[in-house]
Structures are given as structure tokens and as C-alpha cells.
Length: 629
Image (cartoon, rainbow, N blue to C red):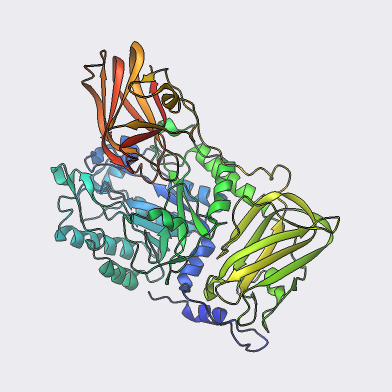
């Protein structure tokens, strides 16, 4: 990919000092393009999911929703961007077209777009409005253009690929520079397809002609980073929980990962032996769902939960892509805005004062011209490096007086590659004894940024030891912080707001059945077969059922498509109450709710018509509840 800033990058990467040229540290391949470095420096940026799904209470629309339902009454893109600025977010990616095929700009390529809605009498352009708001407030702009299109009649044929390329050209031409282009890995399946309600499959590796797409982007947006399951600019992190593994390499084996890659969980770690620089982007929604749903108004992630995620995405060598489901008025809801801003304030407070600033380090080895003062000088493009062949070294700081510490930051100078494979952190206490800091995660990779949290220690000295690396060590920052009172809490709070009537599962042991009603997401009830039969004990009116799939990393036995039946007799549970899909449940296994007209029933039968990650022919249920009116 081309990039206009290559000259500046080359000078920085070679480590040329103002006082005169010094023998440069050789890069250890693979290395990033300049635009990938600038992208990673953005660290946190916003996602916006907004469209027909917002007004039809869907996550993945089928492509059959009426455009007349799209009519936000107070849409204000400047309100969105002001929230992002106050929350410290550096850019925004807009879902210009999601899987339902509805376009948020007045395209002439399809009638399924904002032109044919009541909003502004068909004169609206959300893409254009957000682009202008970003320019006004000084943040970067980007777009999501779903390759899958559940509305287009030609999807699955060569004609659709031609249409999709034209869509991409239109977006990349009319709205100025974008920092990223987002290609979702969800492709092919059930859809409306111009009225042909059917399932269509495609060759995910080859159907869209990605080489041609990359040519288009090279031509029109050479500075845009391309997101995809396997990049090439940045990769999906393998979950929609918003976190990367503590061990996180910015590499992938070229050509191996593709949209819908079955071993996607390894994307949390990267490929240690990869030959292509493809860093991880960690996407997560501030609410359980990606699109707005009124019933999630009380389920917004707290500032503390968002801060916890920041330490586990940016602090694990990734970036933080935080989604805001814009509401039906066309605004970011108040709670979402407040919590995002407070999250930023927490990070500013906890990482605001670097206790190592201006201190001189004692190091075990240094390359000429790259001494340890570079670690605290505030200049990104200066770095400390060890001599050729030296892959183990220590950095030690002495404080004038003992200080409290419970946060640390380490950064490698990634223009020259990612190298560190293992490190340790120690402190000398007031008695003069050296002790390891008590971390709750392994200390392996560093990359662009590694953030460490640990119980507060009082240290006279602080020492970082690099135990192993892929080449000579190259670090451009070491920092230490004390987050203040209360910052020792290392948290991960989950929503356990469950309300349900009592019931028993037919054909399941009492002990196993209890796991589905214990309000503990960590326990999973396994039910043999493809259905779950619930006995409410007596006939009573019911209005909805909720289902939380197995929450383990394996997500065993997920119900992806369902049918729900009711009846007053165990042998005649035949009344169909609801059927459908749990959209995106494989990658976002959150609580699902099935709503239906009030029905009097004693027995409910939840049948899986499509099961993912089937665990020995069993369905995995973390929680299951029945809601009465």
C-alpha cells in the first residue's frame, strides 16, 4: 500500500540523531507501514451502529425492513462527535451499510437507502453529516461497508461484486480522507435478497475479489488502514468482548486468515511466527447489542468496566474500538455519553503522573547513540536499544524517596518491529529486599503498549528485566504510576440482571438444571439433543424468554436459530410462539430475549434449528428464564 509520509517515517525508523548520524538499529521483520504506526497511536476511537435496525429492534436486519421506518427526529452528528471528543476518542467509524444493505448516504446505486425515507424528506446524508462534524471538531473519520447484503437480489452472483465495488468507489470518492475501511467477516446466509427469502453461500476467500478492492483503496485512500479478519491493515481480535490476550503479537501468517476463519480465537494472540504486520483492533459495544434497543437502557457499561477494557486492549498491544448504538432520536443516549466521558477521566487520573519522568535509568547494556534517557524524554521517535546480539537486559530506576506504584507502561519502538518475548518487573521495598510485583497476567509480549496493574507497592527502586527477545531490545518508553485511592481494584463486572419465574427442565437432572437459574454466568447447564423443555408447574401467562449461552471461551452448544413453542400439556407443546435467529451470537454471546404476544402455557419448548460449537450433541445454557407479564 502507498503512503505519503514514508520519508518522515524512514528518518525516524533509522534513528538519525540531530547531532549526527549514528549507526541505525536494524529492523526485525515484519515491521509496520507508517500508516499502521499512526493508526495504533490513535489508541481509542468510536464505532457507530445506526440504521434501519435501530428502528426495527434488530441486530442483523434481513434486508426486508421498510425504509419508511427510518425517521430520527433529532439526529445530530455534532452531538455524537462532541461526546467522542470529551471521551478522549480520536476518530469514529460509521456503519455506512450493515448486513441489511440499507445505505446511510443518498447513493444512486440502490433504492434501499436514505433517499427513500421520511428523514429530511429524502434529502438526508448521515455519512456526509458525520464527516463534516469530524472535520469541525478535529477527529478522524472512517466507514464500515458490509460486504454481505441481505437485501440485494444479485447477492452471490458476479453482478453483486461489481455493484459492491461501485459502492466502495462512491464512498471513497465523495467524503474525503478516511483513516480505516472496515470489512466485516460475517458473509452469506439467510436473507431477503430482493424478495427471494433463502440462504445463499459464497466463497469467503475469493467471492468479493479483495485484490481488486485493495487496488481501489490504493488508488483512492492510500492512507486508510484496511480492517478484516486477517487484515491486511489490522485484524479482528477474535472476540467482541473488547479485549486482547496479554500475549499479543502484531503478526499473522500471510494469506492464512480469511473472513469467517474457523480458528478465529487465535487472533487474540496473533501468530508468533507471522510474516505480516497485522495488529489487533478490539471492538466492543458500550451496550450488550451493537444497535440501539430500549430494553438495554439500563445495561450500559460503567466507566469502571470501560477502564478495565482499556487496560486489556490498548494495554495489551491493541486498539480500542468502542461502539455507540445511536438511539431512535438520532442521538447518543445520556448514560452512554456520561459513562464514556467518565471512563476517559479514570484513565487520565490513573495514568496522569509518570513517577519516572526525569529519572535516569541504570541499564545493563546500551547501543551507542541510544541510551536510556530516551525512555523518559517524551519523544516517540527516540529509543533505548541494546547492542547487536543482546536479547536480555535490565533497566533500573532509583527514587529519591519511597513511592507508591500500582501501574506501569512499557512501549517498544514498533517502526523497527516487535521483539520482546518475556519480561519481569521487580521493586525494592523499604527494607532493601527485591520482590516481584504481583501481576494477574503473564508478562510476555509488549508491542506498541503494555499496561500493567498490580496491588500498590512502596518502592525505593524499580527494575524491568527483558528475559528474551527476537532481536536486540528497542524500547521508547518506561513509565510508572500510582492510580490513587481505590485504584487497586482490578475488576470485571458482568450484568447479572435476571428476572424469571421458577421452572424445572424436563429430562435434565435437578443438579444440572439449577445451573441455568443460579444467576451465575460461570456455570453452564448442558442439555442433550436439540431442544429444551421447560415445565412452569402450572399454566400461567408468559410474554418472553431469555437465553444466555455458555460463557466459557469455547461457547459450547450455542443456539443460533430457534423456534419456541408453548402448550398446556407436555405431549402437545405445538403452538408456535416465535422463531428467528440470534444474530451475531457466535462472536457476541450476550443475553438474548424472545418476545411474543402473551400466551398461557405450562410447558415451553425452545428448539435449536441451528447449533454452533455443539458440545457432544448438547446445548449449553448459562442462564435461561421465563418472564411473566
